Image (cartoon, rainbow, N blue to C red; front, top):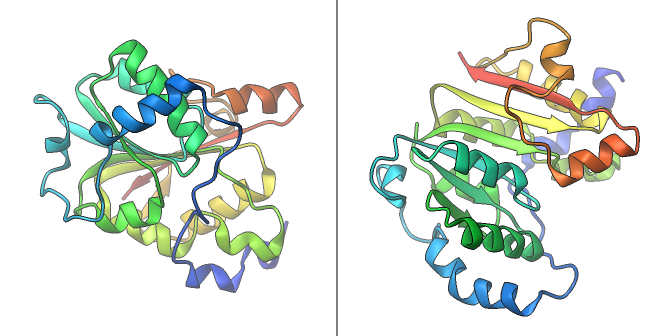
Length: 237
């Protein structure tokens, strides 16, 4: 793939990442109950000004806050929250069914360090205070494979600039994708940014998951279907 294939001028006019909250199959009764009762308690209201310190969204003794954009079924986000009880996690997901699935897991495992945003992650990045996030994860995002839709991909110059603003010094952006064109697109956009450095030193650093990575349901499906994911880690300089 050439640079001309990757670049889409419309990407620079990008303003949002999601195009309406979407729903798939009908929710089970318990999922509907959790959407009505538990979600309001965990939701971050980005219509109101953000607190100066995002750690205050969580219980005491939270030392850092991380964001996962488009958490799908929630497997990775839940595993990270359970493994790191001293870190607060914000999950952003536009799909109602994904939100319902993670609520079931949060209730069943009594997870206290997850907060949720049902909407546009670009708006969340605008809302968050400067230097407030330790890490941002984007795992198996919608690839928008048609060129006319590339402007809808989350990784754009505009959203990278938003990440630079909200990440703490030496903060990280991690990206997982099994679609080669989107991997190439992301590498081109991020490595041309003066703010980020790609952390890979050898091929296995991007061919293999990072230590303790929790494979998602979609990731397992991609493997079964013969698609190989790339695992990209970037850090602010």
